[in-house]
Length: 365
Ligand code: NAD
Ligand code: GLY
Image (tube, rainbow, N blue to C red; front, side):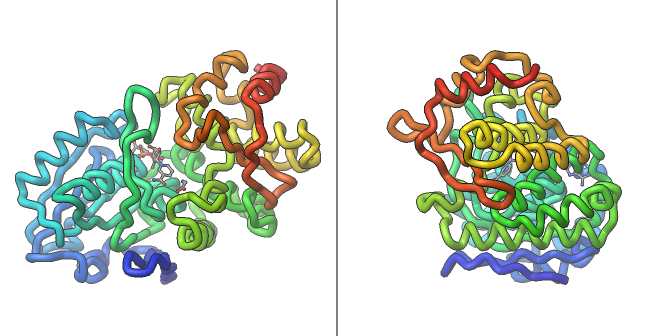
């Protein structure tokens, strides 16, 4: 069992990582379950695979289960309204902790509903995708999407507890495992060269379901995220922004694909990280060898390493237009996460979008 604390003063919480923890949820969640009843929000795929384990673990406690449609479309105003209505119907109170059982979609939606219901009630995260276990369940970013773009309506609202059971990934489809793995590699690329080398050596085993590799990667990733979030919770100190490595490029690719299943978030992040490395190399910031090495590992893991692999044919100008909706845009400038080499990322506020468009026009399609 590994416990990673997220140190945020009065809003501090623990991330509990343990193989089989879901089957012990009754004991582990006891401090968060008030009035002997649990309110669980999940999606249909998770309901069919992992929910029975949670229900058994909570046997003897009154259970209200709300099951939503799977997919990015669930992070919408309509679904938020329907969810908050259902939560009000079961008379959720501020002191309650709604249980978010699912991937980043369920975690982001439930977290945002908890942030606004009754001016803020509690929630706990039980992430069931690799992406949610290594990234979205920790750090308190919650959001839904709007017509103008992804995650534009949201709040910082920290969970009270995060329960991670690596065994729930046994039922996660391989493509979703790979998409989540992109966020694992991200931590090595940001500031941990040794962890990137570990990924090169162990990524294949992790993706094949090796429990020791999976647990190590989750624990390393959560520890890295907890450290960054504790130091820069609201992304004001050019530190949490590093977690967006590959995301500005990736977001443009996701937008080009209409945020559809054609390109999953983690796949877009993988392609975006490869682009950020090649863009950094083009600017003379890092070596072409480092850019090629980062891309080669993503490619070996079955992830897209550029526009062609992501199936994106749009030109540079069209892709840059998607970047204009970015939340990070300040005074007409968009900060980019660039790199001086593997494990040496930094925030660069000197990048012009015309330069980005020209770079993207030079990429293979
Ligand atoms: P997801 O929640 O859509 O889950 C992916 C798919 O896997 C879904 O079909 C889901 O039903 C299914 N699934 C989940 N767990 C399963 C399991 N154990 N067995 C079988 N099927 C399972 O996608 P995701 O990749 O987890 O999350 C993507 C979302 O996370 C995006 O909306 C993104 O914006 C958000 N995100 C948020 C943060 C943050 O800090 N809040 C960080 C990164 C990403
Ligand atoms: N996933 C980026 C962040 O949590 O800041």
